[in-house]
Image 1: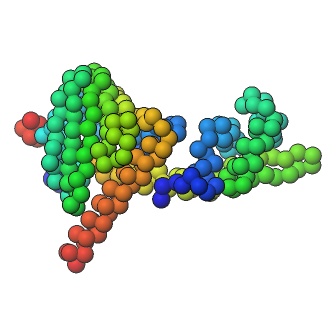
Image 2: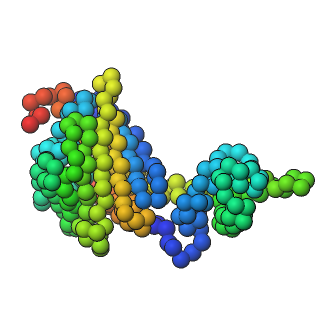
Image 3: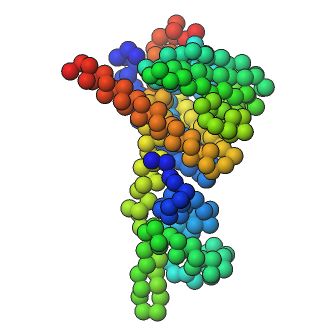
Length: 167
Length: 114
């Protein structure tokens, strides 16, 4: 959050594409070694500092980083609890993590689990992260996008509220 | 808004993989039905049917010239789909910008790298 940290960044550069009617692909580059990105992605103390939003209150952040191990994140955002969990299918430090992901507020439970394939490729000190989210059904993918948009809108409202307060 | 499945619009038109292939095949150029039949290895009635659906929601435009009809993608009609994805992209940007900041902090101050 310090001013120094913001000197070199690539804010706003994540790109989302829809490779098929059941998939979402998020691509983003970071000026950091893959090993550090992997660490920030899988260490609870660090996950809490970026996943979710500035306004999120963390209730659960558990990562049992081994094949078959479980992860679970629960945050409270403006009074609403939002939970995600899954289990790890593949771990290849620092290049690849495959896990399932269940959005706990979404009807359909475990059957609506998505498969997340995270790949980290480092070249010349820049790590390219790709998050491929594979859903079983097109309607699950569309619901995922719609729910993601809701939280994005929530953030905009929060920011608006902050602005209004300062004024 | 999330796409609804009850009305014919750009979202329902591209829900079909065959129609997405057809849009990709059209790309940025113009094609006749015959060209599309050859390139997609589909039968002519199928190609015509897909083109009909895409035209009905305005995703494809047609230009008659002599005995031929040339089809092309109508870019602006894809905008609702583009906007839908971009809104979701903003959410990811907020999250990954925070990761970016954290990585910057961890590199400039390794002691906070627990």
